[in-house]
Image 1 (tube, rainbow, N blue to C red):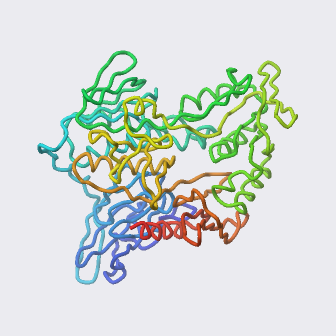
Image 2: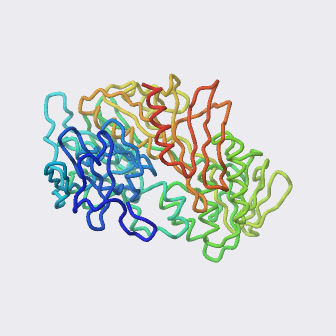
Image 3: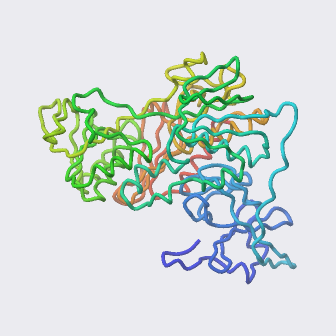
Length: 510
């Protein structure tokens, strides 16, 4: 942990601290040289691990210690507080470790230790010899990496329809679109890391057939893969609107890096952009487009964008924040026609907007055609899975945007990046026989003009939104409830409280 000038904060752990200063069951944040370090104590043993999250570098000393884990205050990654092992996404790499010397009541941190040894290979009659993962997004990539971390040493194929190796998709509508995150920041792993882990990553791989009886997959170019166990993590695709003129080259959707590159290329010489949809993706894109000094119009059917997600009071403040940064809203209307030659977007309200580029951001649909055609049990557009994320076929699991699972006694689908990663990690364990029910609390974050909102839980039909603080003050919490029961919360400037609410929801589910 360091201050705004980058100076390490807390005690110099190389110089030493008293044993009593390290809380039992908690952590003491300090530093070794310029490196933030956390000390933890378990009985007579003391451990030293890195104090900076391996995801986006958040100060873990400001996080929460729960059941032997330290949880990141920004995006809720989870690490073993003794070994530094990464336990829960969005971080995918472990923390560094240091040696510790305990002399009487004095504790000193020594040299950095080598990486943790690889897991013992998992073998046995029940361990699948070949696992195929279909989908190179959040769930699929996290599952593949976790399988190798757990010691799986069988054949492992990761088939992705994307043209880019697995990347940080949440950043596509944020810094990457704004131009402040270069392309080299986006990959989750280096290309070499997949080879080192013996993960056969296939890009531009469009699988068109699933034969459950033969346990094979076939791609559009005729290639075939056999499997003992299969994870379907095919994700979702953007909804496209059947509006006249929306087939023009300068009308875009935003889901992949390829989508973002096409959109960015079309902005050359543009002055104004119309964003259809005022959900988080649409509004994040509006932030990024304003950063490029473009005139931005947001068109939405609802009178109060995002009120059904984060509550009317906070939603109104978010909209006002966007207005204060020059975004023009056109609410309670929809696009009716786009003239790409004249660069004019007509609305069903009768208004016309000058728009050199149109971005459609009205949501996504799960990519379930393959699963449905193969005869897997479906429900309301998703693949129905049990508590362990296993489909109606015992050899096939589903995770991420396509999985319809039980949450708080009701079946649902959740389209969050971290949640998909956690489901993939759970499936990895279950593919090796863990039989673990998935119960992680959903979480996502969204960024607007330097303000980060963090959302934990899942409130599909809340009937009350209790708000403390305000967006303007940089300090707020909205609790979303149904019949007095807490379902979710949105916080601003209250990262520790968000973690505590996550823990409260975990306990309620358990």
